[in-house]
Picture (spheres, rainbow, N blue to C red):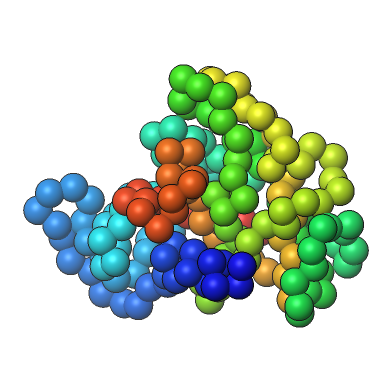
Length: 180
């Protein structure tokens, strides 16, 4: 299991350096992600970035951060080594597809300011656990994801489309949503 998680991190969680250039087709290619907008990053992936307080819109999902609360203790099925605090991120998620969807375990990652990824707890005792909440077509649901962390973090949520939730390493377009 640790090998799979490490592979997912490497496949889906890169951070940027400096500089930029314009692409002739599609969004401009950059080596530093902007605070908002859609760009092609030097890794070839397209990123749509939404600033704090805004809603991230991808073609089949929209995500808005309602709140971020940090707690010393939350009942989870597995507490990773080094966990000292839990981020409870309450999100409103809109399903823009024509079929029922559910947020997948590796679909929304918490990234700290250095770009390090933190996977949501697979099971957590919180009201309206977003991982357990079905989202009907065209509907918006509000629920909570729990992130076991070594310290209080600020940064971005890395969001994958519903269509890419089961194969995130192959995703061509992802979102970053500023939190906290």
